[in-house]
Amino acid sequence: LDCEPNNPEIPGIAEVLGNGLDDDCDPTTPDLLPQCRDDQFDEIQQNTSADTATAVEDGNTSGVQYGGLVLCHADEDWYSITVQRGDGLEIDIFFDHDQADLDLQLFREEPDGELVRVDSSISMTNNETVYVRSTISEQTKYYARIFRYVDLYVAAPYQLTVNVFDRC
Image (cartoon, rainbow, N blue to C red):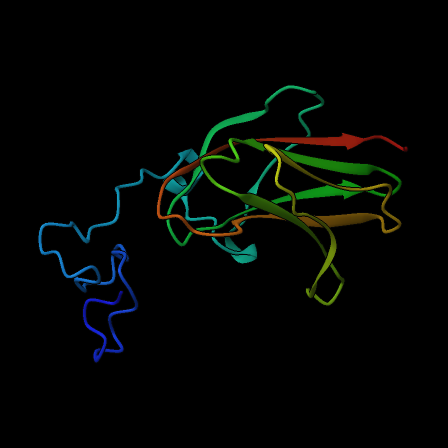
């Protein structure tokens, strides 16, 4: 079904957005990626790695703490929070799974600066949750990584809530 079977650059019958090729051999099919507008955190500074993670605070809420967030194509968001000894941490993201499959990972920063993954949430639901019960260090910095399981080239809106549990 490939419209150019002798050209390995053309992968099949469907148009692959943004690759600069006419994959479906129909010049009327646009090759442009849909536009995606960055969220408030990305506009201040791209938070695409642990080094540029956006610092967040305890929301002490069961509701949405940070709304209007979005992952654009080939994007991931990182957030950081410092937790005191004995405190627990829970991070939740809420989104529409039919629109995008987002996943969540939680990392702990070791004294040498290395990041160690301590929890992951990968499901087929409209939310993901990660947590740690309590920290043993005087202060521990955690990083949350939000990413797409599959990139569908569309904006993926989501909401974020961070809760620190004192001496749980």
